[in-house]
Length: 113
Length: 110
Image 1 (cartoon, rainbow over the protein chains, first blue to last red):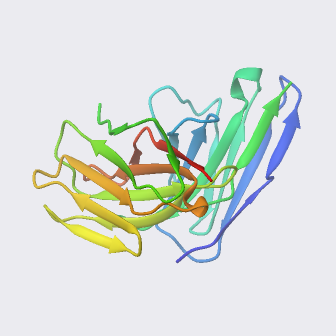
Image 2 (spheres, rainbow over the protein chains, first blue to last red; image 1 turned 60 degrees about the horizontal axis):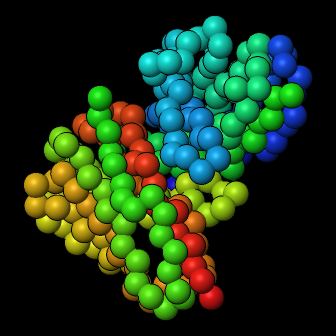
């Protein structure tokens, strides 16, 4: 199993600013992902964080808005750039080996005012 | 695109009653995973099914994978207040990323 430490757990940010969310895994994992979850909704995949290369983004998400880093097999960051109130949501990171269970961070509840 | 639909969206049951959520896909699934998300929490893995017709049990929870591998169900017998949360199914659809179902939110009336 893997334990993921995600921070911050919550933040309130001014529009136009950026927030970087960090996820640290207690063991090396092949794959890490970033999701967005609106309250009461399902999880929407933002991107796959690839170690040592550019992230793979899903339709509707772009690197300029959500830059992602993954410098090694245990750590990844997601930045929400130039925030607007529409970016208010819960952001979750996950880690898994292909075809096995996904482990999630505790989530970051972001409010943009 | 690849989608996984779940029904019902919401379910309110009296404590002690049974609960079932269904997961459906228009395409064959390589696998099906089930997760539980408590209110204010993050998704937690429950189980994975990969074989056609597979049935697995965890105490009061029974998971089934359809013969055609296009549907799955989660059944909880005699619900308890600790079962409250949203239950998601998810599948890899044969690739590395996980696609989540729409979820079923279970509330328990004591």
